Image (cartoon, rainbow, N blue to C red; front, side, top):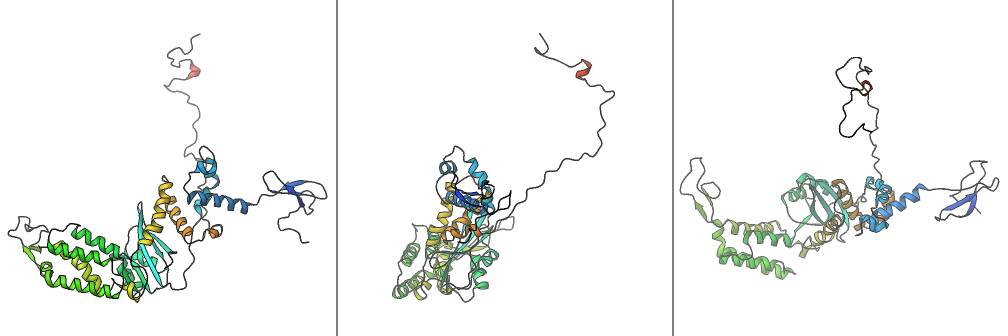
Length: 382
């Protein structure tokens, strides 16, 4: 029978050890058949794996460190798992182009986390940045091969990044974000018939389920423009100019659009229809909102940070990455992820720039040896 890989040799006589039961802690005990010396081995890989499992169960769970460890403060737990913060979570490289990709960003403190998921809502890549700029979105898109359809919220940065990185990919604008943009321009209680009618058209957009509904909706939007389109072009001119050179108007210019908010609301729908970003989900499939990403992964990240509030910014970022790894079902690979060793600065003995002059030979200060030390209170009294 071949020897176990966990055997070792005796340090006294260099004889191969044999198994000799278990210790009280459950570790394997070894005995030398020649000299009878008994010992047990501590495997660092098993200890590290166990510490990492406990760390992840705390980080991704809802219990505090004292509750998880059964102690008062959890100080020993923090000391044993401090190295786990140095692990760098990574997702595998995406080589096969996915069919549908959903992208969105969420803000965590002063950082913004951009996330991309596939049609099964599995994280594909992430990117940390300060704001949702074009460069940040391009850094995220470069990690994934161009898919068939991308679902996004339609910010200016992401539109420019899509044109550069995925020019042939179809775009589906999140219908819920379109509705929120209409609400911000029109409010839920428009005062004019034109605003009320346009708001009703926006509500019907969320109920479009097939091509026939989409054609009927487009006809309603065209009918609205036929009746109320002239309002989006009306202008109001200022009557006088101020001393500082600006005009007496809300914008400081000579003229402005009379129904500016109505114009912006209509342009939101008209521009998306012109770009063909409204009904891609009907022709190419896929979801029509980013709700699964925002209400799923983003909500899980926010919940984790809320349960373990008080972490530093660096630990918050690491916790968000572990949530993405867990969502991707890759926690079993955590022990094989690289660890960044942080070398603590060496404490050096301070160096004096001038030699020690020794005791003072003549001075005006008081010294105990001279018997002139100032005393107050009951000091020195018998």
